[in-house]
Image (cartoon, rainbow, N blue to C red; front, side, top):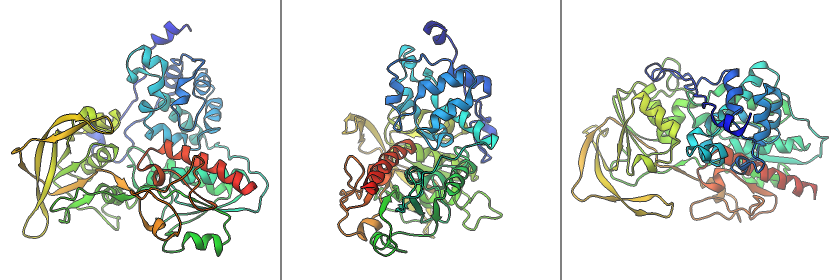
Length: 470
């Protein structure tokens, strides 16, 4: 086909559950492409020689090549190309912000002057990955002969999984230490089932185990054992720290200690990891709410708001101090939240939480804002409007304004240099200030994306392998 013919092909919409149905269940919202839809969408790729989409991919998947194979119906060949660079295609195809990465650079999207009409790279990637997984024929990477070297990986999120797989392929003995009782990190405790089915995460963990990677759960490095103990007493030759950003941030306003006020981290962990929605069997069920306020405008805020609906809330209100245009959440997540009935309040923010005689939250006091000049991030700063306070009745508040780094490892590892925010300082090869100790993912970047964490992990694994070879 000519470029003009490709540009004339209609983008393939993603089938999904009806909003009135899905807001009452935990099943995946997006249903995935059919084979014909995947071929049609892949055929929209212009096959640019410069491949600008690859520049937008943190792990540098050869995107035009896999799309060309998918367009021909060679899905085995397509997933083979993807897996050369990405270990988690079924996950990245679902949760990565392609519209801000590979698809943002798509020549087709730029020609049509709408990133929403760029080639849906992530959706085709998801189809290829799901097809392979459902066939039961996902191949394991080839493992080189044993080197006799041992590597400890702290944290089993995207960065840790990537490091573990890459180093195991090189023949090193790898052990993952996970603080929770289930491996997977943010993929398990943070992202809801309706966006990322946990069976997909488990299949990737099973593949790691089949490769010979050992996983120890309920192991809190800094408490169960220190990094120095792992290296000096347990005999590990190198350590990778991939503990993520799991320390919730609060607003520092009166009333945040009231009953019924959650961090989004706690709320989602209860629901995702501990399955609070299964009220008959969950050991830590969530309190059923009537009127919920979610404070924030990112993907985590959308996840929390949509989860609250599924946990039985009658009303869910999302409160954000800028306009919808400035929201960092994915456009798709905002769209899904609105479809499901989440009520958006922009240019507003809570300044106090009000309690009843029993110490439970009963309302939030809000202030209205207008937008001023851009801040350091480029977004226009919210400016409070004097005298605009008003009270808003709620029985649950979820604070979703971001997460920071847990200081446990830095406080128990002498000589490890961190920033004032607690992020580990590394060089261009993800090496920390201490010999043999590397770090990557959110513990370095701050709260970021799955694919960025994987890119960090891939770079760190290469550096660790070189270090061990020396």
